[in-house]
Image 1 (cartoon, rainbow, N blue to C red):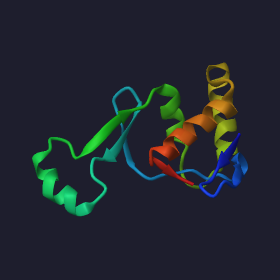
Image 2 (cartoon, rainbow, N blue to C red):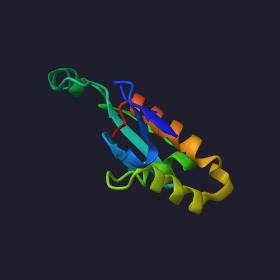
Image 3 (cartoon, rainbow, N blue to C red):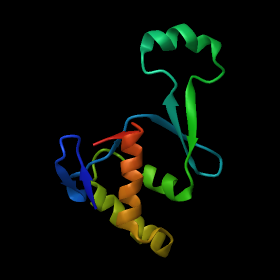
Length: 115
């Protein structure tokens, strides 16, 4: 899988080192919940935040997404993580490189990760 940068430059999986850019928590069943702030501007969060029940959106990942998210540490590249997922989950995640690549692209597009 090859990732595209904004400049149009292609980036292979072994050069992509994903790191989370939002907080997360784990529920009782072991699934990950991503916590994305509702406001990007700090002044707006301070102004409106006290009137909100929850200052963040809660995005619940399925078991495959949770397994992948838990491996995003900012140190390993995407190829290493994909191989680990393939070893751990086997046929459940096949085709691993395409699925994991699309997952990372979706997370990047929605500003949940950086690389």
